[in-house]
Length: 235
Image (cartoon, rainbow, N blue to C red; front, side, top):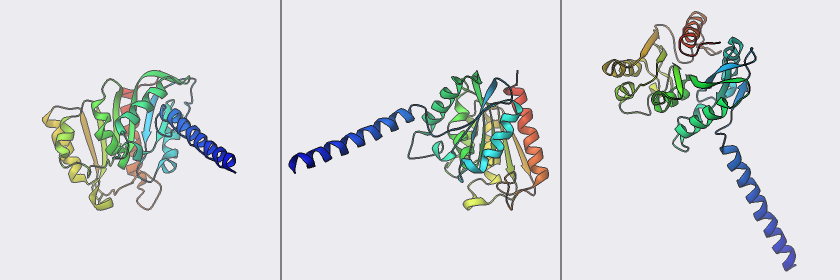
């Protein structure tokens, strides 16, 4: 009986070790990622960072980006704007992994983000000019910061911000007023930011749901495509 109990304890410890080692190996590549291969043999890299509701609600958008010809990686915004993990390191790992993909063109990546993922862009990607070519942020979360203007002044990457005038989502996590503060900070530092405000739009205006506005969604998409064409051009 003693040997049997000792064997069970050993097997339990071994199982825990195997699980821990597997987790460590997975962590080397960063957080979970969904890859959409480009419509061409190879494409420049675009990292799409979801909002709080998670990647499934943003797969349609990542697919559209891939159809343009980009190697597209979709990740969860909760893994980038987070207090439980190292969001900056997570983003760097995602970028590093994408740069080694056979269907990706190595080099800087473009970042397209939404809500909480947009907040992650503001927290980390804006100060990564050696790795990030541009950022397009849809209604990015700003409520995590007490000084949004200073965030704008730290911008080192060309950035497009797309916001709805009527956005009061989640206790004003992403209010248009904070976007104007962000813009003011960027201007004070001569940082490369463009703010586009849609007067009748609410949070998630380009996601399928009750807030969807087709004209604003089409305009936002057109602007993102133009931004990609300028800073992350297709070969």
